[in-house]
Length: 197
Length: 197
DNA sequence: TGCATAATTTGACGTGCGTCAAACTTCTTT
DNA sequence: AAAGAAGTTTGACGCACGTCAAATTATGCA
Image (cartoon, rainbow over all chains, first blue to last red; front, side, top):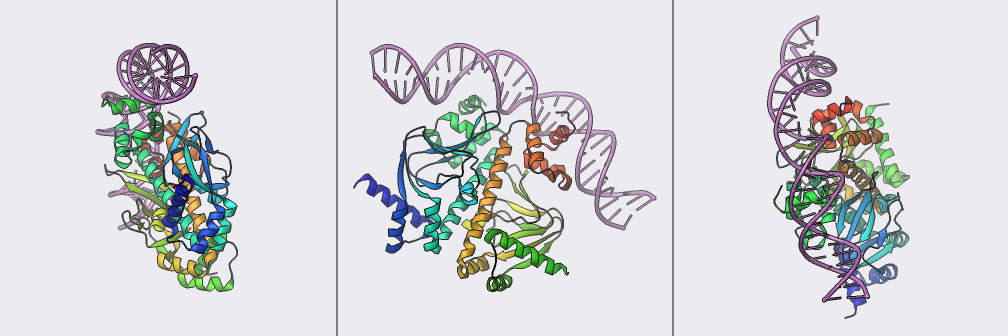
């Protein structure tokens, strides 16, 4: 099976996940709209300050979202792996400039659809509308979890908690980014892991 | 003009805000679905751990959302004033237990609609679907702002930033809750405000 | 108007974690 | 296989802020 066919299957699985079984007719139209793209490690997929013109979903690879604060420090706000949406969700819906940038941490393959096509498609098949609500709902819950995580005061507890939620993270993401995600210094995370804190 | 009529106007203004102008026919159906409710200071509007059965929007008053962490400490995650939605958004869509509780900080009047009626209505008038997406989008952006706020390390900066975003908060909400919202001790907030930090 | 309760302030003390700096280790690339 | 870059660890030092405790001020209710 070719890589493209493979990706196609993934894309279909996606849509089914969010909106249920898909009809032949719907599938054909959808296929006219979605596109595939590949990124190298380090490539920017969305840039903060811009209004996102598309919605992307990770097929393979890992994406990191972050923003730069006043002091110029990078703040990681999320990781996006296989089968997860990776785009500035709120901004996509509200048409406002995105607060975060999205960058490929490894070679990444995505399915994407332009906003225009996205809404065009929704107009044709209104029943798909619930799909976007689900995507947004998931993002909301994820965001809430992260906020909750950040409120835990001790670094040790923050890290332990994250391990509980996403143990695989540690094997896949450089510690710098995990530290940034947890809102602590890299050195602190290192000491926590060594059991020195 | 009676208070109920007043509330009705507000409710209509709401819907228009999220979905544009509303037709006579749509309005009539909508009116059959929405309800009004009043809460006393301290009343629980949504309880964490439960799947929200309705969506509420504040007409007058102020609502606070919070969750209790492992140590039993209250963590304020949001304030909801006039013309704002106040319900566990992500959980409403995803049908999962809510992480946060919602409580009236003052006497509160809300419009609310059950999930069942909500989706019933959407089925009849699909064009309203975009409304929920907008509500969710707004919540997402608000949540992102809060997370960003929480990442700022110095208490002084966190407070200054909040003042910039929502100056009116201070005149309306007890400092305890603002401190909790900002993730700092009440005493620290007090010192920050006194210019001693 | 006065009392009870809630809200805010002030003080003293200890420590978790950030910062800077340097060593060590593991991946890339040729 | 070697050289360079990227990632991680370790040490030393200081202070912002949490915690406990008690005083002071504001608020609601009889």
